[in-house]
Length: 130
Image 1 (tube, one colour):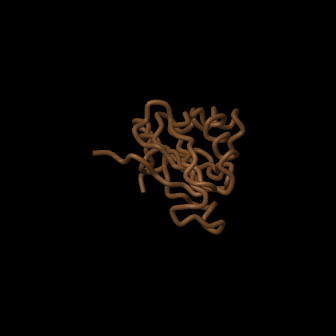
Image 2: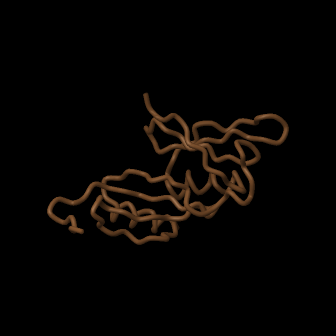
Image 3: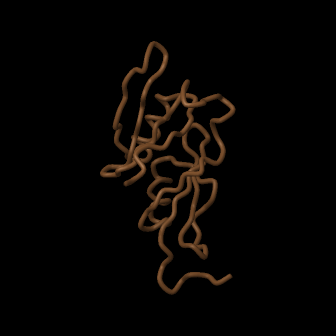
């Protein structure tokens, strides 16, 4: 069993699609109409099992639910290297990379103002104690 999809609310699906595919380098999994005014748009990192549906107009969407903490955290090998690369792609970080008791941590904002965390395992020997 695994998580197949997660929903993230957006105000502009095309802008969000551009951010996730260009700035993050993700793939479009689905992009299809859902009736006259809705669209099923999902993206995912290459090879990932889980996709993110960039939702507007369904699943409880409202403008007030777009932006702020998304509750999503992406696992990466090295938060510092990943942040450096994403910054080169124009990604704005809300929390600069650091080493915490649980590992590497940083957070960035997507094109819609949703904050997404990135996490990596703690470097050996460099884990701070509480």
